[in-house]
Length: 399
Image 1: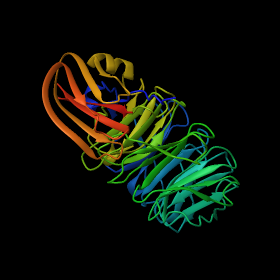
Image 2 (image 1 turned 90 degrees about the horizontal axis):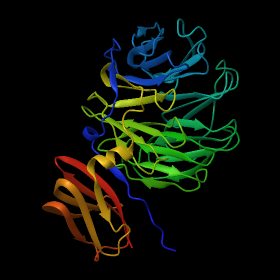
Image 3 (image 1 turned 180 degrees about the horizontal axis):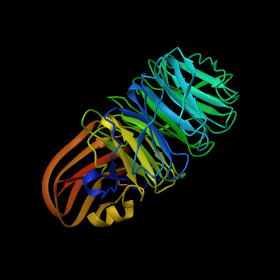
Image 4 (image 1 turned 135 degrees about the vertical axis):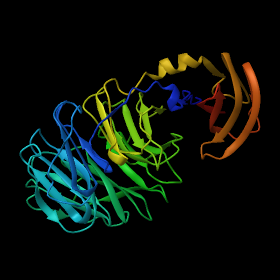
């Protein structure tokens, strides 16, 4: 039986009607982590010991006294009053009074980039130089875990349950590592040169995602068998992706960017389709958090905090309908037709699954255009159309 793949539509941010609004954080620091233990109460951490708290859904932000001038990279609250933050030089601080006061639990070692707790006692933290620590008493003591054979830099982690967890990292092997015994042992389940994995998130014990911050590869990897195999999802992001979050098994978000660019990608279908959303800011985004499938926040450079109350914009069905484009037959054995109503196709570009350029064609066609893919090898291709100044990309299968 021939395998039929559904066409993927990716569209430029200006046409996604993204509904993210910029909030006044009162800070100009780089903000690296965000967490909301309730719908209205949230915390943001950043450089130079920055900790911001809101109790009114982001309308107002109060600068809390962290007790440190070191950069903070991640924050995690297990309930509305108890939380932790981690940062440079092995710093881990904790609060038990909703962020009013913070005390140090560790203050030496490698830079720590993400902290994660399963309950009030059991938590993990990951950082550079293959650092991974664990606590079983709420952070009173932190024990190092051995990540033999892993990446030289471990930057993100996620646990499905008390025993099964994953870490991803930067370095020569750019590894994805897995434990099934609460961190006692780790196995390398994937390596990819220069992928620079930046974040990992699982929606199901078997289904998980990893994004890449790399300058070369800016894609998302997905597994549906607990990490045994990983498939590349080409997002066509223009810059690196730093964080992944899924408020539901089907709806997810990836954020990133570089210098003066901001990236917010949304999937409505479990990673098959990734749509760019308008963020209302130009700074790169480093982290995001969703209270539910509609209410979300993202943070980034120069004090940027943005918020959405409707998942960031319209769904893919509305976007497809607004363009009224058909690409058929798909899959195709050779001839491929592009039909569009009352719009002009200025150019067509085709790339293979590796991103290699196969065709650039300026056609200036209206209503319908035809392409001959008979000489192309069987496989997956990405068809990029420039239509009325906008870019549309569809996935095409050549049989």
